[in-house]
Amino acid sequence: MEQKSSSFDKVLSSWDILVIAFGAMIGWGWVVSSGSWITTGGVGGAALGFVIGGIMVFFVGLTYAELTSAMPQCGGEHVFSHRAMGPIGSFICTWAIVLGYASVACFEACALPTIVTFLFPDFLQGYLYTVEGFDVYASWLAVAVIVAIFMTYINIRGVKAAAKLQTLLTVIIAGAGILLMVASAINGDASNLESQMFVGDDGFSMLKTTLAVAVMTPFFFIGFDVIPQAAEEINVDLKKIGQILILSVVLSVVFYALVIIAVGLALSGPEILASEKSAAGLVTADAMAKVMNSAMMAKVIIIGGMCGIVTSWNSFLMGGSRALYSMAESYMVPKTFSKLHPSYKTPINALYLIGALTILAPFAGRKMLVWVVDAGNFGCCVAYCMVAISFIILRSKEPDLARPYRVSHYKIVGALAVLMSGFMVVMYILPGSDAALVPQEWAMVGGWCFLGLIFGFLCKQKYGERFGLLVDIISDEDAAALQSTDEEISVALDGAIDAAINKILTQRKLNMA
Image (cartoon, rainbow, N blue to C red; front, side):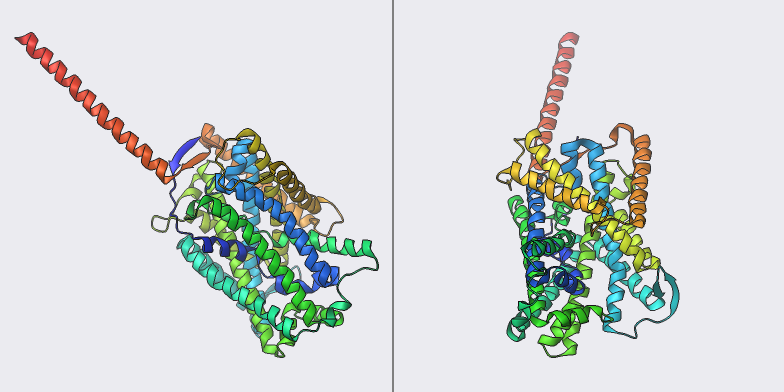
């Protein structure tokens, strides 16, 4: 293990890390998918499903909270899994999470110009080609590429600049969501809920449809784990970091559940079905238009969803670059990815790589990117499971490790976290499940694994014993203490050398006399 002081600037406040995590979890799904959630489980069933899914993610979040406070280093999962499982386990875990972050960032680059078409129907101009049934237009590509360049530039300018953008957009998202909730509570019709609280004829079928929603929900909560990636840049008490991470999960659960209830109050069952089958299929936006009695207000929700896309994109670009940086620091991928910008202290080459992928991704069309993001979500769930296992291992392996945020009943929490995250992984693998990967997605997972093997083999050959070296970041206080000790040793050595020289010179003078 190698020790050094952090190369990053500690600039993120409590608010910054809260909006980074919350913004990552609240993307476009609450605008585009609310109708399918309700038709699957009913208003009550869908809201309850999100609570159940949130509880599943909550236990995984608890393991992250403790480990982040104990090891506040850039890379998060990389450090946790390395301390618990060694370099091979760490490589698998971190490479999986990089796939997750990069894939979501690429998907958002396609999702953003797609939303612009909802706001401006005549936006699509200059037909170029078709990929898997998706028509690619010059105007659509131009918006995607320009925004991708801007997002990469913002992240290169520093994590604080990215956090400021995140704050602005998260406030807009929250404002749009709260406006919908308040308007639905005032102008909505409670009788709409009577016929669509749950889907099913009996208790068992209602439970089944509720769980069908719950199975989908963890994939909408991916993003809280961005906090550990930027741990070295957080200027907050270590115990508080864990608390904020958990708070971000709770706020996301509440937000999703209240949006579902608001849509249920605004629209009846037939209206939700009609909205889903419309050209836009934006049920949440139609709910806002009805309760505000204005078609223009639907665009407020669409703008909120657009901001959600950018906040997710911003967070995952940040997380992916830090994960790649941490792998490069451990000589697991080419060392060039550990280079920091001389002024902004950001992993510039890692950002260039992921930024380049987001610029190129739109050229593949939206359908292919859906496959990529599903493969990436699978990678995230694999990493979650490995972190949960690392949590249990480290409680046994390093019981005296300082844990500012310490989870009570760790065996129960750890077991539930492993079971919950493992369940998500199984749902991606199990044929016939709603989340099962299709052959194209398995091909992408396989390709990513193959690329990882190539990187691992080449770096092992090039760096030898340094491959998998864990760099331990020491605190500023410890670094100052070490520097002080070094200075004291240096002064003592200088004094000893001077005394020895004087003694030799004195002896020579005596001999000459």
